[in-house]
Image (tube, rainbow, N blue to C red; front, side, top):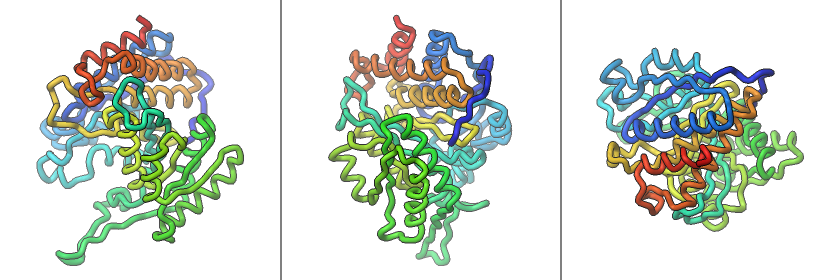
Length: 366
């Protein structure tokens, strides 16, 4: 996930918006407001936002949860914000198809899912001193829908037997390991490899061996490896001891949800999905249809995800102001929560609008 700098930052960024389902139409516009405020206050290049159809509404208007026109438009943009989707509620045949997020990740080979977990002061975190990042390989592993050219990668030779494939390749492991070690160089210079090579000696063994080979190219970064089952215990007991954690697809997905809850709430868990030249911001949580439209949704994860996209754009394009804006986004969120403006999942009473307005106010320095 290297991000080579361009010689001159662009005059503006063109970013895609996909509101998604459930609480998506509430939290994605909240992130847009905060991003626009942060860019304005640092004098950075503005954003031209382009809303694109996706999800249940796109099924109604375009006959597809992820229309071909959306994929074509995304290819022409600098980055994207993706709201949560509720694919389990789609009518057939859409429910059984690859969900919109998976389809975009696969189409654009967004191989690195980067999920920070950092405690927010003033919240209800179980482990408020948590400050780690899980770097999840996003294209292979034990998630069957990532492992075949067509179809889901699952099959049933009989009604009573179901088989799912797990795929591990040197190429995919090398690039996710590089992403983890490069990130560690910008943090506390420590990488933990999570695996189950003691049981899955070939597949998880290849993942571990290749990560350790990549580690040799980063002598300035400390490295260790931990079995996935033991890692869950370590996170519960001493989450603050970890810096960057690299894992295959399913292990990374599970660990990042655990780490997000330890740090405060899944409502605060951000992420980006990135390749070497594309990046999509996406909150780690789901669409929460039970609270959709009620003003109860926590926008923090989506706001922080958008801030991560700003940081990625800034580093890729040599745009220090975009990087500065990303810092202001996170600082604004932290200041608002620290001052007691928090949604219900964080132990507060603020609405989505209340928290968004509080973050915008603090980003703008008011």
